[in-house]
Amino acid sequence: MDSRIKEILNREYNRQSETIELIASENFASDSVMELAGSIFTNKYAEGYPGKRYYNGCDQMDEIENLAIEELKKLYGCNFANVQPHCGANANTAVFQAFLKPGDTILGMDLASGGHLSHGSKPNISGKIYNAFSYGVDENGYLDYEDIRSIALKVKPKMLIAGASAYSRVIDWKKFREIADEVGATLLVDMSHYSGLIAGEQYPSPIGYADVVTSTTHKTLRGPRGGIILWNNSEYSKKINASIFPGTQGGPLMHIIAAKAQCFIEANSLEFKEYSHAVIENAKHMCKVFSSNDIPVLTGGTDSHLILIDLSSKKYSGREVADMLEENGITVNKNGIPNDPRNFVETSGIRIGTAAETTRGKDRKWFEDLANKISEIINN
Image (spheres, rainbow, N blue to C red):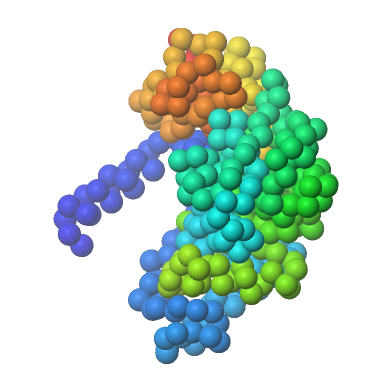
């Protein structure tokens, strides 16, 4: 290995080993997952799907992809799955291509309220190709389903998107289904942040409500960086698969698909259910400590791994607090809050997640002590 690369690798290893990881979209994959992500599967081109490859020599590629698909379907109890998306945004883009035409109307959660770039944000391709509208949250930070319904009745989206990247509470998939049915929209659920908690049966599953479900495989699912698509209707299979290859991607990343297979197997276990429960409990206890230290938490708490701290009444911005925490060996990310008085660069919030440090075996008392330390840094 080139000495310069090795040096950077070692520094990152030391950073991860010596700092507290609280970024809600990050986790620590198992040694098996990381071994497969760097395995000889990376050497093979496998354009197409099992049994229908463009290249020869794909027997093992077919076998590992079929295994990943079967384990994924078993994990979430769905009929069909695609494990080839390179990331969550790619999965969403492919679903848009499968069900929409350029200029069609979509309705997703506003980025400033906790949504994701790929749900119709103007700087993103989803906001450029499609006629994108958004819904937000109420003054307390909760989704207002009646308001979402009124917006949907007004703009008549062809696709309604549920899911978030900075919303800590349970999302009512059934209500989104009812709204989608009322306006005749396809319902896409992006469960990226909650997929591990759903696999661990600690957060409601959108399977059975959504027409299509997308997710990343890292975050709470604790796998390699990548994406997946799930669905139940056999009539969707051809267009969804075609929208990945050849629609939006070329060759699949077979080393990552192999690592995904391992991740799905690990997540379908009692140990993972216990882990998912601990992730949420640790987040709830952190919220109690923040509240007792006059650190406002959006919605007053959490139902997931995610905590959004409101700094709008504090002296320092989200960017400044995130930098101060990093100086103290704690990694979080700045985050906007609803009706943020500061700009997108500074923000008035920070987002905290408990998934990574729970993977490391940290318990409730450790998280409570950490929340007190974070509170002291913010208040002082």
